[in-house]
Length: 131
Ligand SMILES: Nc1ncnc2c1ncn2[C@@H]1O[C@H](COP(=O)(O)OP(=O)(O)OP(=O)(O)O)[C@@H](O)[C@H]1O
Image (cartoon, rainbow, N blue to C red):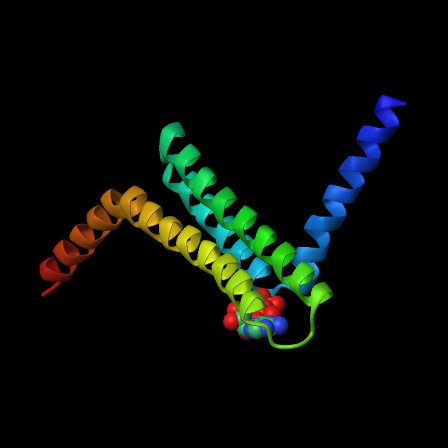
C-alpha cells in the first residue's frame, strides 16, 4: 500500500539522520550551533526573510554532512586499503561540507552584523559614559 511504503521510506530516512547524528561528532556540533543561532535570531526578532536565509544555510550544512557520511561509508564498504580515488571521493565530499560551513558563517555575519554593530556601539557608549 502507498501509505505503508511512504511510512517505511520515512523510517529509512530518519534512520539515516539518526545514524549521522550518532556517529558524526561534526553533525552534533552543526545541530547544536544551529539551535543556538536560531534561538538568538528569534530572541533578536530578525525578519522572516533573514530567518529563512539562516535556515537555508543550516540545511545546506546538514545536507552536505549527510552526503559526506554517505560517501565515506560507501568508500569504506568498497575498500579498507589506501586508494587515490578513495581519497579523492572523501576529500571532495569533505570539501562540500567546508564550503557549506563557510557559507553559513558568512550568512551569520551578514544577518547579525546590524545587531552586533548596535550592541558594540551601545557597549562603547556606556563604557565611555562610565569613565
Ligand atoms: N581508503 C582510503 N584511501 C585513500 N585515502 C583515504 C582513504 N580513507 C580515508 N582517506 C583519506 O583520509 C581522510 C580522512 O578520511 P576519514 O574516512 O577518516 O574521514 P573523516 O573526515 O576523518 O571521517 P569522519 O567524518 O568520520 O571523522 C580522507 O579525506 C582521505 O583524504
